[in-house]
Length: 252
Length: 363
Image 1 (cartoon, each protein chain N blue to C red):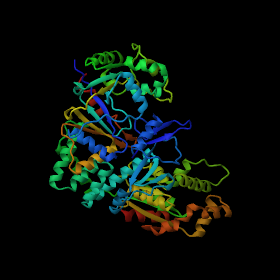
Image 2: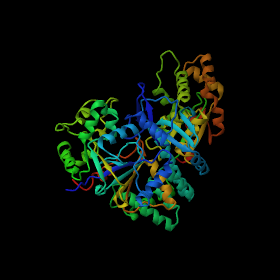
Image 3: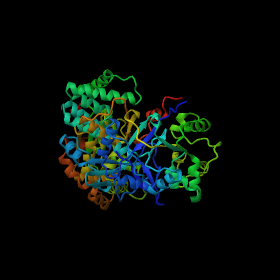
Image 4: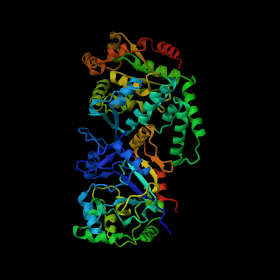
């Protein structure tokens, strides 16, 4: 069965690009006038370590399976899994950069364990990887939606190092970070314009889109546009029900 | 409205003002990345509180345009406002930031519709493009071609956001309702503010007006009373004056005003009475939040000797304490407020003056 869950990519250009230009560039990508580029990682060393361990030799585009991260992102892209055809570099059963950098609860992985852990948790260039993913979904979550909304999995049947990280209390308190168990997928080439299904914007980014739109720049009509908002409870980012439904895809 | 990242005593960082992720830990790397990319400003010097905080961002260009349009932003307290190159950031409880934004949208909508003001309607998009009032204002002030284009876009957004069956007709009907509501004459949703010097009689007249017109009454004195510990051996008025001064010094007049206005259920729609206005910036804060077109100020006067006599008799203050009350900073701006009053009432004629005011205002 083909993968139905969608890929989430939190778009970030390089730090020199203004936020207005950043959104304009995303609209160009959605219109097929530009390509999504591999971005410079925030934790350069961690990502470089992870890429070396996993055997990545040229820049890749990162996305999460069924998740848009970070919470404070401005622009999110929901991408059809069809884009993986001919572009799949590999997947990892968690955030590879977080693990390589031993960030947050990944700090429970010892320095000398992380390379083997990364290799054990990664599947490279195997188009059937999603049967492993589906198996984990079936064993660990009540539903696909539960995975998409970031619920902590039932990891009783798991045997890998993620168990240690999830089961111990997060070093800085609060709930465990979903990047401990959310699958990462890596593309060796950018998706095509028709693979982009939705544009998810923060409230601030929506205002910038309005400004672009009033100057005649349109988002292609087959791309769903969702947006965060503000209310008496604060700023709402990428976590609305509609976003989860889109990421879940048409499957059960 | 923008969220904040605040520091804990142990040096770790957490988010504030982010719905569903309040007090969520964030790494220093993540924060530095946000700052580097211009998605976050580094601001300093604010005391975090236990309540969720957010910031109101007001750009200079927006400030100028909204002032020109006659819907100014309330006076933002300097002690919680950071000036940056492109504008200002006011750090405040999330509910306060929201109230200021919400009231700006509602007032701007009224003004845009009544004045056929397309520029103000466009400015509303800078604040909340997805709000129905913003769409309705844009629709109402646009030409036919623009209307059609905008309607298509809004339908597309709504269909993606969980309303798959919405039509342009549905939107037009909801816009019509909102516009009609603004245009049709309806029962006066006046807000009557009262000010007076100590023991001037504003409380009595405000109470009487509220009773006669069956309006909600909120009071700065009441709010302070319920938020200050009153020592048994100190005259309450002196304690409340000190507490009010302290709050204004620490958090500003807008904070105090918004706290008092929380006592009104439907602040942006209902008529109500607010009593105990004693600072110019409090007056300006209240007036701008409720809308200048709804607000009237009544000043209540009573001769000095009567006020002194009442302070001594009713509040059992000594001569020295009376002198303290009258010299308190709370009393110093009242003569200026008096000059701005729409009505001046006689505090010694409480009931009759209240009746006269209710009749004059038609409330």
